Image (cartoon, rainbow, N blue to C red; front, side, top):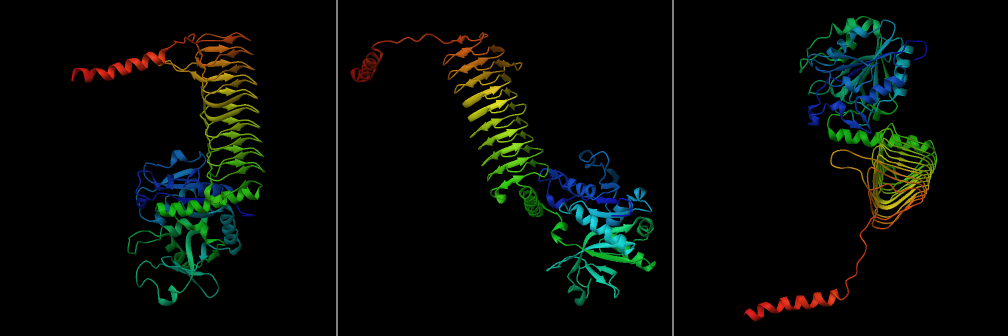
Length: 472
């Protein structure tokens, strides 16, 4: 786009998407962690768009899902693609190209948009069609070239007789993405008619209008036709998702991340992974998760909007909206819920659940424990089946456990309660009062052994069994 203002990118997004059979608008269906509409918006932004205009449906269902700098206009009635672009004409500029993209082609890249505008500018054309060479052009509009290599017209092939047998042999198709000279587009749009089977205003009908006015119309062939795959139903969405997912995985692998089996790994588009991290199979990384260098995540792990430091190991676990610092050991089968912070060198072991808690550096919660709404100091060790009873039926309360504390197995802390530094608890204790620094907290009934209990119980049972026989 060298030497020209950033293009006005118009994204057509007012379609109903009825084939999705969903109450959710088609372009809000998620695709690798981003609503479908967000993909062409992101491509336009990365391509240096001077302005992004989204043509929305009545009620503007997409507006709240778009960034503030994205302009939305409303196509009040669904009267075709030319009518939709006409709704955006107030935002055209005479000296900036206008690029029209369908909102349901999420694989389009910034590089392709950049190349299209460069080719359009170099050709000095009033319109440039992004075309593709495909093996099977069935169902697509064919690009009919003029003797000088320009575009004479686009021939639709939806109905028998629309195209001649010779035209049906053409394998150069229109992708539906076009670039226009902003100064000529608005006038041409107003001349488009509805002489077609659907009675709609079609954007490709602008091309012969521009040609009749003496303007050049060109085509630029895309290098990878996959970029223009459209999404009409959930089958299409799955196909596009597999391609997008592979792109995401390749980007990380080329940057130094080991993904053991990309086909069994899910990574959202905004996930950040540093070099030398290893992602094992059946791992799902969602939202804005970040993973530091040298960490090993998975197999069978799900991370959502979490920050993972360097040198950390996470195995068969679920972590959501948590912060995990460096050299932490998690799992297998641990659950870290929102608000959890695990400091350097800490551990959450097998079947441990942490919620809204701060686990100090070097502290270990090895197994079978629930820690909720707690602050734990450094180098503490919580025994198996340690539980913080943080809810009294009305409010949540916090538990404070100091540094270098050792809790024995099956200890319950009834919050609010504070355990001092270097303190201990006895096995099976229910701690309801504070434990001072260096003290041992014991809160359990004294054991009592009843001698001869087994013999007396056996005699009683034998007597009860003999009673029915005596009555008979």
